[in-house]
Length: 294
Image (cartoon, rainbow, N blue to C red; front, side, top):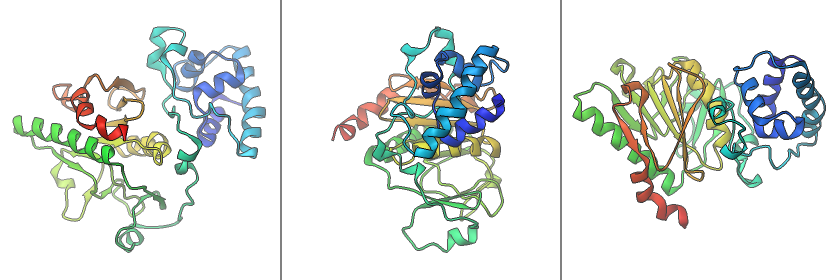
């Protein structure tokens, strides 16, 4: 089994780097480097250990449909051998959610659909259409909505103060991501700098900047499926806000596919504007913390 084949199985089964490390005996920092492409040719002994894991444990867990409890564990900084290895987090690493919060993995998709089918849905039905497949969308929590609004407000203030041409939006707004009839998404927050993409009914084409606020029901959707969909469509920058972990994962695709991570104590710079605009998550948390406690 090649590294490429292992990468495909990792995505197929949703395994985290921590889970692979615990099952194969390979240090987690090494696993991260291999699956992020930093170490494309590992030692033979390392390669054999990973092969054994994927050929035995991976298939066994998938067939039983009873993945280990560490399968979705979010990486822990203390588990990384070297401080510099923080930069090599696997691109599709997913955070921990309880077993009753992984509904995004159990969605029964509605296949071979088009934008015409999407527009014909009954009012109030919340789905996204991705590559001809419908995916259910759970109603957002109060703090989920508030976080999105506050981020969009900061972006709008920056654009106004600089007489910018970019236009920010928050959900719900339809985005015809690929300019075809197979994909329509509703990001939590987005910024469009090419005003020709803004039509009356929807955005047509990839926004420059997207934020998704993650919840129990959409973690897989945001960290896996939509991550690569946004990148391949031409989105320049993508943030995944993780309220329960109090973290923000920032992908600035124009520079790297490897994300940077921030906390709710940080001012997070917006890459598409050279970092001149910063979103203060410490202020945001002060405004929404009481909602998360209830």
